[in-house]
Image 1 (tube, rainbow, N blue to C red):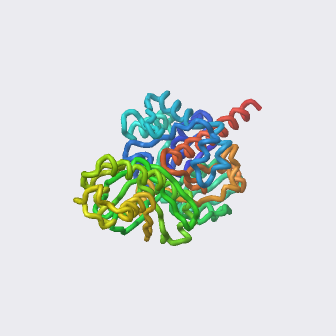
Image 2 (image 1 turned 30 degrees about the horizontal axis):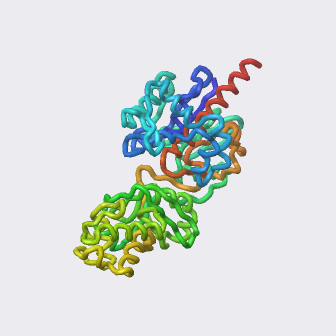
Image 3 (image 1 turned 90 degrees about the vertical axis):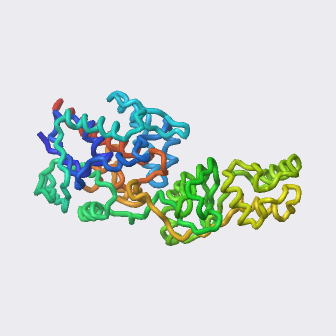
Length: 407
C-alpha cells in the first residue's frame, strides 16, 4: 500500500485527507502545532466562515486578487455549493447570511472541525502533532521527510503547510520558485482627529479609494483603535497588497463615509435645512451615521453644535460634506489579524498543474492552500480555495489507484 504523507494539518490538509480513499493508501498527517485546524477554529470570530454563497465559478474567481485565472478550472469541479453539500451530508447544517457569507447554523467553528476530525478518525488516518518538518529529500521513487519526530518515507507528498517562510524555504530547496510574501487583508493605521475615541463606530456602506493607485472599493467600514477596518478596507488591502508593500504602508486614503455623491449629499442637506430650520445642527439626523460620528464631523468642521440649521453658511455646509464624502487621511502603517493572517506570495502558480494540483517539477507531489501564491478578499473565499484544491487532489489520487487496479 502506497504511503501518503500530508504536511500541514490545516483546512486544505484535513479536507484532502477526509476525501481520500483510506483503503487504497496509508495516510499520515504531520502538523507542527499542538492542535490541528487552528485557522478554522478562529475564523469568523470563532464561528468559521466556511465559504461564500457564490455558485458561478466565473463570478467566484473575481474575489481572488491572485490566482483568479488558475482557479476557474478548479471551481468548475468543486465550488461553494459542493462544500455546503459536503458538510450538510455530515450533519453540519449551514446558513447563508445577508452578506452571502456561509456559517454553520451552530455559530461554532467546532462543528466544522468535528465533521473533518470524525471523518479522519473513521478512516484511521494517523495524525502526528508537534511534528515539525525540517527538510524533504527526493529519493529515487519516494521522498524522505526529516522531522522533529524522526524520518518518514512517502511515496506521495501532499504539501499544505500554509505560507510560513520556513515551509516555503523547504519547497524552494526542492526547486520551486517562490514569489515574495507580503501581507494581504490588513487594517489601516490612521491617526486623525475625525477617528479619535470612536473605535467601534461602523458604517453600513462606505467608499474608500487610494488616489495614488487609482483604485477604489466599497463595503461596510469600521473605526478601530488604530484606524480603519471592515470589508471596504480589507478588500482594497488585498487587491493592492503588493503596491502597498512597495509604498511601505505610507499613503493617502480618501473615504466617503455615506457612500453618496457630493451633489446628492448637498441636496439632502438643503432639503433638511428647508424643512427643519430651527433645529440645532448637533441634534439633526440628516445622514445615516451615528450621533457621535455626526458630532465629531461638526467638531472637526469647526461648527458650533448648538447653531440652528437655518444659520449655517454655504461654506460651513460644504466643509461638512467634504469631511463626510471626501475625507482624506494619511495611512502610516498596517495591522494584521494575527490568527487569521493571510498573505500574498508563495509558490509560483506557473509551476502547478491546476487540473490535479500536482507540482510540474516534482513527481507525486501535490500542493494546496495558502502555500501557493493565491489569496482572496475576506468572506470565506480563502477557505473555499483550500476545499476545492484539496478535493481535486483526493479525486486525482483515488482515480489513479482505481485505474491501476483495473489495469
